[in-house]
Structure formats: C-alpha cells, structure tokens
Length: 234
Image (cartoon, rainbow, N blue to C red; front, top):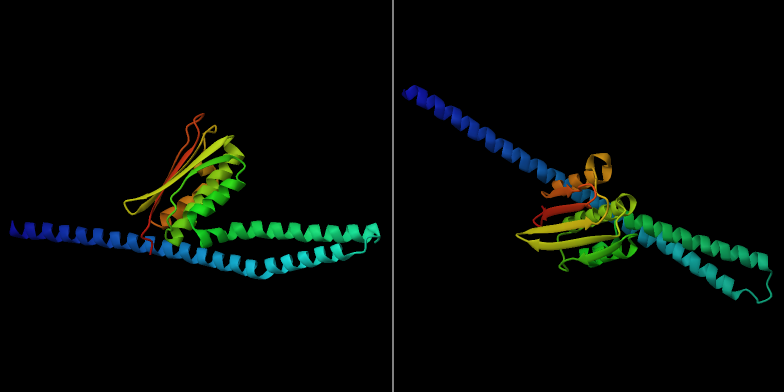
C-alpha cells in the first residue's frame, strides 16, 4: 500500500512538473512573440522617420523652389514652358502626397507624437465611411497603441470595401489593466476572418501582446470587432 501511494505521489508530482513546464513554455512563447512584434514596430517607426526627415523634406524643398520659379516668370512668358513647369510642380506635389500616404501606412507619425486618440481621429477624418468616436485620451504603452491603431484601420477599411456600412462606431476604454476596444458597423454582416489575411494578421498581433480579439458578424446585422489588450506589455 505504501509503495502504491508513493508511486501515485511520484506520478502526480511528475504531472505537476509537466504542467508547470508547459505553462512556462507558453509564457516564454507569448513573451517572445511580443518582442518580435515590438521590434518590427520599432523598425517601421525608424523607416517612417527616415522617410520624413529625408526624401519627404527634399520633395517639399523642390516643390517650393519650382513654385517660386513659376511665380518669378515674367508676365509675358511663353505659355508652354510655364505649363510644363506647372505640371512638374504638380507632379512633385502628387509624389509627396503619395509618399506621405506610404509613410503613414508604415507607421503613422501622429501615433508617436500624439497617441492613440489623435491617431484615431485622423483615421476617422480620412475614412470613406462616417465614424463616431468615443476614445480614451490617455497615453498608453506604445505596442498597445500601435496594435489598436491597426485594428481600427483594418476594420474601417473592411467597412468601406465590403460591409456597405454607412456609419462605424469606435469605442475604447481602459479598465482592469486592459484596453477594451470595440469597432462596430451597420453593414450587411457576414464577415469571415478566414477569407482575408488582414484579420488573421490582426489576431496574431493582438494575441502576441497577450490580448484577445473576437468577431461577431451575423448576416444582415452588421459587424462588431472587439479586442482586449493588456497594458502590461514586456
């Protein structure tokens, strides 16, 4: 009897040890994924900064110079050179706008400078669908702000492209050490995260920070995306 009891205790101890090891391995994996996401975001921010401080400023300078040359042309100048110079200036301005859009997609400068609230308001202004915002104004850890920004950006893009929505509601709040965020539209619903890489990528990003993301999209009743992200990101 004693031998049997000792054997059962030994087996139980082994199982406890395995469970602890598995829990530690999972924690290590989550931490590793978070470090990868944070490192990638830092690299994106560096690229955005290099674009802003380098080629964007150069294009701005060239466009200003071209405008000044155009303005200095004598009143009776030939129309063809003036038209060509004007077209060149417009081309520089268009290239600058395109570069700014690319830079914003890499890492929006307003997110680093002002935080999640101003960044989401900027997204709302550019959205093809009307957006109603109720967002917290406090600064949050940068990885949380970046993940939240891209969740909203993807949701707004999907609402404009696929949902046939006329309004999107974006709500964020902080409680219990977590950011709670909901993005819901009044579109046609029926969204399937398995059909697009965007939502899959967002899920990976949020889960890498220890958070969760859920999608509710009944046909004919709009789509609701809810994400929870812990503020304690290491």
